[in-house]
Image 1 (spheres, rainbow, N blue to C red):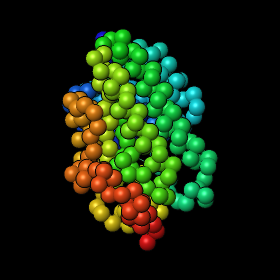
Image 2: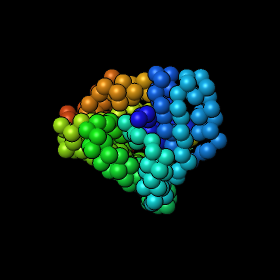
Image 3: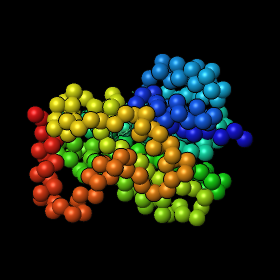
Image 4: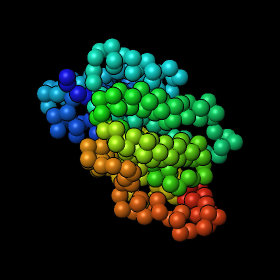
Length: 257
Ligand SMILES: NC(=O)c1ccc[n+]([C@@H]2O[C@H](COP(=O)([O-])OP(=O)(O)OC[C@H]3O[C@@H](n4cnc5c(N)ncnc54)[C@H](OP(=O)(O)O)[C@@H]3O)[C@@H](O)[C@H]2O)c1
């Protein structure tokens, strides 16, 4: 039976780069996002250029039932998912009392609930087959919750806790759960408001580099991987710097210039 790597949020940024680099490695793909035109184009280009099989599914994973429906459609087509990459995610920026609650509940559904649903359903199949890999995309903010990114930071802290604990539960089953933590990356994720903070004074990483690290980790890695040495150092700071000082520094960095 043919196997597929499923990537959510594959139509742009890190997910798009991962899909292209995996296709180059002769990997069959299932790509998921909301924008059908982009997925269609990718299907055409990647299958033609690399001779791989590419299926796409249009899904808005901020809808409550979307992840379960997506799983159902993939099963109906009898496609076997060997690797699942939970990459789709959004963020927002601003003072919590002013940001949109609707946007934040939708973010929680996408960044947390749909990730849990897809992980639950595909990991059950993988355990039965005694084989599979799941990689969840967190953020450096998983380790360093930032003011003005309150809900986003919390969704990514969830990814860290969930991935680590599930990896331990599934040890010995043949299913490996890992997680990847990029820092600021040059993608459509970053809004103009985010760009006007001190956080964005440092040069963002290229999504191709993040995707390359991600693929290595997905195919061979275990546990958690922070992308980039400086981001790794930053992720360790809370172990050495008192909370109150850390939070003051982070508030300064995340403030509008
Ligand atoms: N860029 C950064 O600085 C950064 C840093 C750390 C972590 N990350 C994480 O990296 C992951 C990828 O982000 P990115 O930077 O590559 O951003 P991006 O370029 O904006 O890509 C996000 C992807 O997710 C899809 N998506 C968004 N909302 C969706 C929804 N409701 N349902 C289904 N798909 C949806 C988008 O496609 P459609 O719009 O077509 O649906 C797109 O393919 C996210 O989890 C993000 O939190 C990013």
